[in-house]
Amino acid sequence: MTARVPLSPTDAESYGAGTGFRRGLVSRLAAEAFGTLFLVIAGLGVPLFTLPQSNPLPAALAGGLAVTASMLAFAHVSGGHFNPAITLGNLVAGRLRPGHAAAYVLAQLAGAAAGALALYGILRTVPSIPDTKAAFDTVTAGFGEHSVVQTSMAGVLLAEVLGAALLVAVFLGATARGNIHAAAAPFAVGLSLAVLLQFGQAIGNAPYNPARATASALFSNSWSLGQLWLFWVAPLVGAAIAGLVFRAASAAGEGEVEGKVAAGVTQAGGSDRGGPDADGGSDASGSDDNHVKSGIDGPDSDASGSQAGARTRPAAPRDEARDFFDGSGNK
Image (cartoon, rainbow, N blue to C red; front, side, top):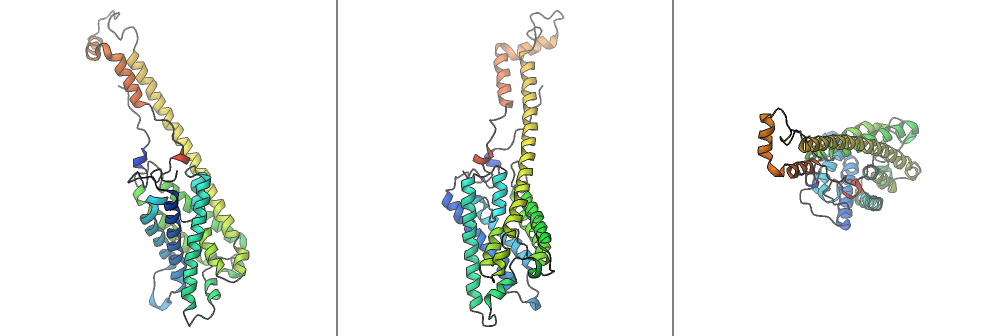
């Protein structure tokens, strides 16, 4: 008998494909904007309004929990990016079309700006905070004299590239087809972000998220806009690296599976067609096994063999750009 090679999961088994309902682009953009707004409110608001003596929730953990909550709430709609770096990683990995990726980034920027504006408005009502921009400076990403430990530009750039690459790699791996733990993706991504935020806090308030960096820079003093370029370039470079590695690994894995399936089909076809002895008519030894096989298969043995081969043939290769992990919602 020929062992069947298991095929890759179907769309219904992919992350976020619970309903199979194709979401409209407007719904996905609204989900991305609202999720990013929540991320900014938590990631910037918690450290802005922290009272150290009250032993509050750490800012890094608050940011990670906000991502987890947003992914649990909205990932089935949009995929749960809330970060231009993660969107770029999905684009490079072949999971998202360029036009939709650009729309995602604009929605994320709008949501982040709205969140920062809300925080700015709240700060203006606090009488003990006379300089709102100076308050925002404390949570804005920066390097050199604007880093807590005076980290140089090269150090912050390297930390952002590394952190963004790790974050995007976790996202792509946790939400990949075939991952039996895909339901836990929000927790994997959120915890990873919390750890990375803690790592980058003293280095330069590294957010690994260009939308969040832009939102805080808009309401800080002018130095923040001069340094903002680093917090776009570095995380996008890290995201592109992770996306390329994931795409190459996925292509290699699919090629290996297709090769095994093709080998199984060839074996099945050869055993079903058989040789001159397979029909039992020209078998000089008159083997009982051949007669039994002939009696079981009957005149339709060739047809059943072709059906068995068809059952083991793989489906046509999927185009990841048209078959996104969130239930084909990003078409």
